[in-house]
Image 1: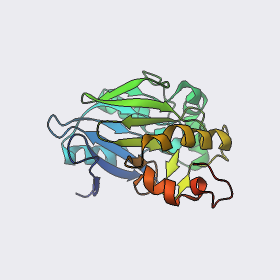
Image 2: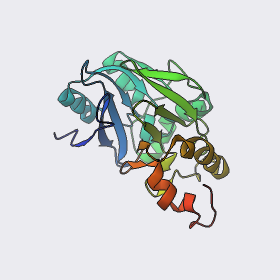
Image 3: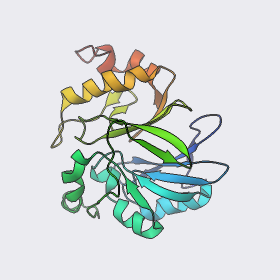
Image 4: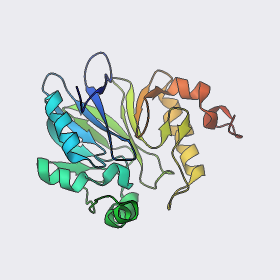
Length: 230
């Protein structure tokens, strides 16, 4: 596939995932769908909507919703327009990111990107559940990179969508407005690490990883960055 060339299997059975890098930020817009019904969701459509829609067509997905992990421009800039194109709802992130979503047009002007403010149809909170084609995801509120960042956890298939909370070998930046390094580390320590070493995660930029790999090698977890957090 061209637009969905970075195809990732979320698990041996159940939902499948295609990662579509978009915009100069190379943000991982993720398509998640049930291979039997072809129903699925678009997660974090940060831009390049023609590119995303081509990928949707290539995998044959019928989009039921858009999900946002947080309100930064590289993840949410295209959400309002894609909602109109597809006629679907937007769920997430946590309402603490409302100021970021309302300021997307200004963010876009600063970065030279087209963006429109986003008003989700449903804000997400800790303990909520979202579904994709009937598959359930637990919502974890993991502030720090942004105040309203959420992580979506599929316990049946042992994988999570973590946005910019955690990366392979790194963590989300906290030098942006509303960033909080201590809160981010606390969320990783108390909410992500306890998921289990076998959990795979798709992050907002770069390659996928597992909780176990990051527990062993991530300098922000092992302590080689200067502090031990595990």
